[in-house]
View (cartoon, rainbow, N blue to C red):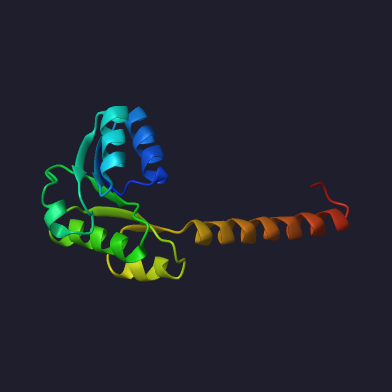
Length: 147
């Protein structure tokens, strides 16, 4: 699969490493010169240096054959711009981004982002499910049933 990652934070390094190990073709759009050099030196991937939320920078990416764009920028608005530009301007059908504000998850989906992921949102769901399972377990134990 051909994947473009926008952003240069620690999440991006982890994801590039993981995707390359799985055999994917990865390119990175990065606005930090030193991190761009690290991506190139560590992974030998194509690195486009510049602000990934700037359409003129994204125009330097060869989107031919790109299956998914993943935006990991620090700012939610930048992630939305990257995803919408990839879809509307460059014709990428699948976009994924991280969302810092969990309230933005549904909004981003309505605005065309294929998958919007919020760590806080996911954690709240996991805690909710765990507490529900704990309640079920307590009820079963109180009625003498096996856990």
